[in-house]
Image (tube, rainbow, N blue to C red):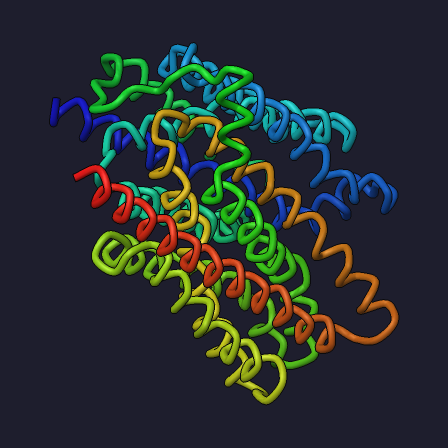
Length: 395
């Protein structure tokens, strides 16, 4: 049991690290693609949605049916399909071919991400907070290395080398899963029926997760999209370009720390403390700070915001552990909505004002996320008191 679980955990962490690298390689390579292929701006704007549509569709469909599916087989298919798509991106003769490969890669990655976290959930039913944060820490490590891989590939002669190298790593991850036995888990995923789906969506923990994740992932999406643009006006050339890498690198220790604290402190108290610290940190960084103090503030923001998504997911999954696949799908879907919506609103603000104002407006969703977490904590205490009172009456 322990060897099976340990090897599966290593393979899962490697596969999610490649997912983070894929995402950030895509962003880092866009300026070079624009030069090499010279596509119109509207085609460049399709890169993110084309990669997301297939991913989200598969996440929702496969994640909802996680209790019926062979996780190992679907993960292997997803990884091999991703590797093939990465190779196609690396040899694409035209931008539209590259765009098609992005769509295939997103779809194939959806098969992996729909099932890997549920497997981890059932491997560690008493330790989800720690393991979910370690899992997402691996994603952050891969994401931080993505732009570095592109820079190295360009230095060696071509951005295409980055996709070839990434495809090889993904094939290695698929080979690991191929050699593994079926996961020997401590708890089981139950199929989602129409009745259980309605109950799931009505649970207060799920509602709180979806609301909080919309606000938090919206803030993250705003930072991912507009932080380099903002930093270009605030920091010297050469420093502004690394702000996003600095923030992503801070995700690694941030998620490690949240993983260590999640079960000791409790999910909601930890999340409330992080949100409470983020609000003044944002105010300092984007209202008062200048020069290199902005870079320091960005690093602290990365450290604090890193653990929200995995910790909030662990909180919701603990309420319905038999449906970790659907919870994973719902969280990923809401995360994508937040990441897509808030940056678009910020673009409107920037068009009418400037990037500094748009960044300051991100304080509002942070305050709303804090309010959701505090309300969830209050509701949880009331439920616990009611359960205690009911138990006393029965005795």
